[in-house]
Length: 601
Ligand code: NFE
Ligand code: MG
Image (tube, rainbow, N blue to C red):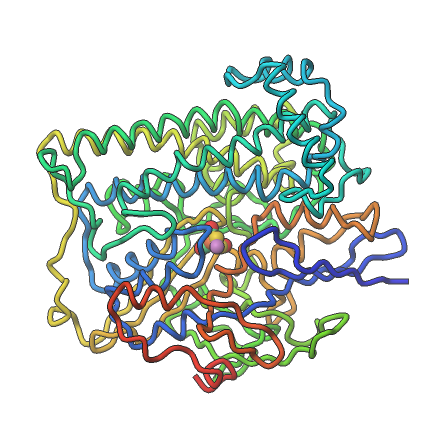
C-alpha cells in the first residue's frame, strides 16, 4: 500500500520547506511534492518606490545570500536606464559576488549539509592519531595534530554528555545510512567548527567595500565606496591589503580544507552518484562579467541552457524574451487575472495571493490543487535545475580548463563516468569545484583592480542618470546574476520615475518549484523519485538530496508582512523591513495590509 511521508520543516535554517512523498511497499519514493509554507511580500512592497532605492528593499529577501538581491536589483535598474558602470565597479562587484559564493558554499557544506553525511556521535569512537594521519595525508592544512583532534573529540564528548546536543540536536545519529569511518567523522566535525570561525575572515571583503555584512551598501551606477590612495576614508593601500589577506585566507581554506574533505567523504557515498538526478535540464544566466553586463560572451560562467543531459548542445537564453521565462501558478497559492493556467513573463508578472490550502493542523496537502507559496518558473516550458551543478556543467561543456581538471579528478577518484554528475553527489561535488574556481578568480579580479588603480583610474560610479528627470517616461529592465543557489533575475518596469512592477525569479523558486499547469514536477520533486528510504520514520535520504540543492525559502517566496498578521491560517514571518525604511529615511506608510495578502493588492 502506498504511504505518504511528510518532512516539515526540512531546512536547517533559511525558512520553511515541506516535502511530502509517496512511497511504495519497498519504501521507494514514487512521487514527491515540494511546498513553501511561509509567505512574505517584497514584490508588492516594491510598487511605487524609487528605483534607485529598490536594492535596499530587495536585499532583505534573504540574510543568507545577503548581497545577491541587491546586485540583481541595481543591474535591473541599470539595464532599464541604460547605465554603463566603470571598470573598477565591475571588478569590485565581482570580488563581492565571488566572496558571497565562497562564504555561502563553505557554510552550506559544513553547517547545512555535512551532518547529512557525517555522524557526529560516531566521531566519539575515532582514534585521534588515525584522524591526524589521514588529515596529513590529504592536506597540508596545519591544524592536524593528534592532540588537536583529541581536543575536538573531547569537546563533542562534553556536548554529548551534557545531554544537550545544542547545534547538533535532531540528527538521525546512528542511522545505518551513515557510512563514514569514525576518523573521518571526527575530521569533518573539527572542520565544521573551524568553518564557523573562518567566516569571520571571509566577510571582510563585504565590510570593506559595502560598510557591513550582512546586507552591505550598494549604488545604482557603480559602487558606493570611493577610491583614493591618499584618504583614510576611501579604498587605499591599507584597505586593499585587508582584501588581499581575506582572499589568501579563503583560497587556503577552500583548497586545503573544503575540497580535500569533499574528496575524502565522497567515496563512501558512491551510491549517491546514481541517485537524486532530477530533471536533466540546466539553466545559467552567467556571471562575472569582464566588462559589464552588456557582454555575456565575456562572462566567466557561461550563460546558457542544457536539455536532457546533452552536454553537446548549449542553448542560448534570453531573459527578455517573453516566450522564454514564464512563471506558472496552477499549483501555487496565487491567482492571475489572466487565468491560473497561463504562464506570465516577469515583466507582466502578477503577485496576487490566494491561499486555498487546508486549515492547520492538517495531515497532508491537497497536491492535486494548489500546494505551495512558490510559483513555478519554466524556461521555454521546461522545468530547469539551476545552481552549482548547472554552472559546472556549462563550464565543463565549454571547456573551462580548471573546471575540467577538477571534475575529471573527482570522477577518477570515484571511478565514475561523466553521468555520475547528474546526481546528489554530483551536485554537492559541483558546489566545491566551483568554489575553487571562483576563489582563484578572485585573485585575478583583485590584481586587475590594483593595476587599474595604479594606472590612475579612480572612477567607481557613473551618476549621469541619477536624476529621474533624465529618464524616459517608461523603461523596462532585467538584472540577472548567478547567486550561490543558482540563476537569479529581477525584472523591473519603471513608469514616471517609480517602480510600476517588480518581479524576482529566484534560484530556489526554480529548484523547489511545485508542478506547473502541465503537471510537470520541479527539480526537487523529480530528484526524489526512485530513492529508497531505509527507515521511513527517519528519512535521511530525503534530507540528503533536498539539501544538495541548498534550499532557501526566504529567497524563494520573498514576500513579507511587517505586522506578523496571519494570512488565512498560515503564519506570516516577521520582517526586517522597518529597519530598511528608517535607514533610508523613506516614508513608512504603505506596509502590506492583511487585505494585500488576501489578494486585494
Ligand atoms: Ni536566501 Fe538565494 C541564493 C537567492 S535563493 S539564498 O543563493 O537569490 O535560492
Ligand atoms: Mg517572484
